[in-house]
Image 1: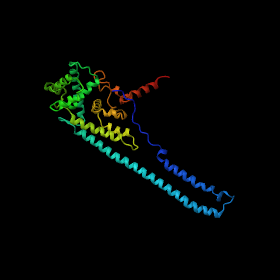
Image 2: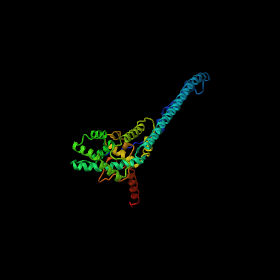
Image 3: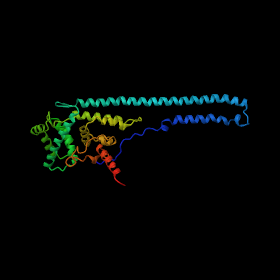
Image 4: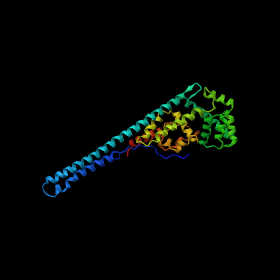
Length: 328
C-alpha cells in the first residue's frame, strides 16, 4: 500500500464578508439610492430650494424610502432566520454526534471475552494476533511461501477475525482463497490443533480458548466506528470536522488504534483508506513509536505522511528547538 500524502482535514471558517455580503450590499445600495434624491431638479435647478417641488419630491421619497427600509427589514429578517437555521442544524448534528459517541462507549463496555470486558479486550486481541502471526510465519516457511510483512498481517488478522471451527474455518478459507491452497489448509490445521490452542492459552495466560474468532465482536465494533466517522465527514454544515473526529479518536486506546490499522490493511477495512479517513483525520496517530516491531512485524511509518504520528510531532518540535540554540 502506497504511502499517503499529507492531506489532513482543515477547517476554514467563513469570513465576515462571506457570511454577511447580502446584508452589506443591501444597506450600501439603500444609502446610495436615498442620497440620489439630492440630484433631483428641486435641489439642483436653482440655488434655492423650490418649496412646492421639494414638497412633491418629499411625498414621493417618503413612500419610496419607506419601501427601501421595508426591504432592508426583510433582508435582516432573512439573516436572522438563516443564523437560527444554521444554529439549529449544528444542534441537531451534535445531538446525534454525542449519541453515537455514547453508543460507541456502550459497545466497548459490552465487548467481552471470557471474564474480561471493555477496553482490556483489545490488549488481549493484540496478544492473540501476535500468537497467530507466529503461526502464520511458521506455516509460510514450511510451505515455502514468500509473504510480505503486509501479507503476514492480513492472513493473521483474517485468522483472528474469523477463527477456526465448523463454520469459522469455511469463512477463513474463503477469505484466503487467493493464497496457496496447501498453505491455507496447513494454516487452518495448525490453528485448529487442540494442543496448539492449549499451549497458546497457557503461554499468554488467556481465560478463553484462542483461535476461535472474534467476528461477532469486531464486526459490530468497526462498523459502528466507521459509521460514526462518516457521519461527521459527510456533513455539509460549517463545522470543524477534524475537532469532532478528534474527540472520537480520544475514546480509542492505543491497542484499539493498532487493531483498527491492522483491520484496514485487509479488504474488510479497505474503505477507510478509500475514503482517506485514517490520514485525513490522523485517526491512528497515537500508536506509539515501536508498537509494531519495524524489523520483524511492519513499518508503520511507510503507510502515513512523515509528520503523521504524535511522536513524530514531538521529534519535529525538539529538532526545531535544538536548531534555535545552535549559533548561526
